[in-house]
Image (cartoon, rainbow, N blue to C red):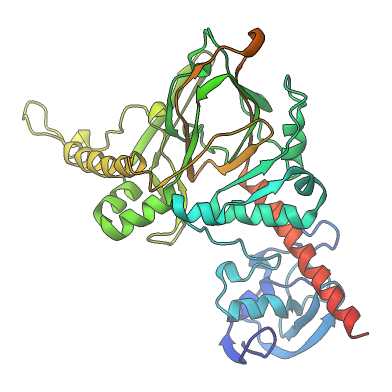
Length: 425
């Protein structure tokens, strides 16, 4: 079907859309359940041989202007009264005509990633006061938008009174967005460094750049770190690196290394006590169908397992000939070395550094932003006061952040539309 739209476009434009696309996208209440919003027919219920009988643009309550079409053959399994109709919002179609990504999702576009180095992030980093984050939906929307774009944001003035257990202020902070991601560390977990600790994970040693839980099938997308205490210590600087920026650099300046990191698998593994998880994935995971757009990055040297061998069977017994894996792993080693060199840049071009103070919380994309902490030393407290460094952490899946953002974005558009209608009534 040819569709001409002057709506939401600077110039009218004609596009040709497949009939099955229009019928499958119908939001008629007999086709999508009004309360559950679940689709009531299958794509295979739409007959391919249907022909257009008529069409028009009508205002549909709750959806605005919609393209309503009538077809010669009915969709199976729905009410006979609507089986030959389809109803598609004009805004949705206009978005397609403008070339928007993901066919102009009805509930708004996900903001594109904005890769950064230290200088760039210093200019754009989002700091949000916790009271505004907690009580103002517009502040929450702006914060989530920055988190999606930059992969990192900071909150300040988050209460630190409650420190122990799983019901501190961090839980309230996370649940303002969505549901916690529970792991074997619990809902919330502590990174608590005190002098004389017997657990190496909670010492004052340097923790290099890494991502958490890369050995999971589905690593948590977002990580929260709330500073509860940071007293009588010297050092302990947090720093972050945007791997999307590093990947973009390699794509431009070292395309062969970029390609190797997109295709060569790396094994990640954790085997300790009652837990044993492992997963094999490339360093750079691309968006489906793209040659350069990233879905996620996987880099966590402390949790790497043995490198995968794929072509060992090509080696003939007793021949002395090396398998194809030797060349493949040499290429991987070279590409990872380039990537690691950028991460370790002594000039600090790619590193954003910040000393987390009590009451501050950093939220970052664990599938994009590497995090680390420099070593620190304990200082003698005044009057024998106990010092130390204590963070409370939590995880969240990416769907939770995107869902909250979409709902808030739709509410914002609805509020703007209401104000516009009020001005002309």
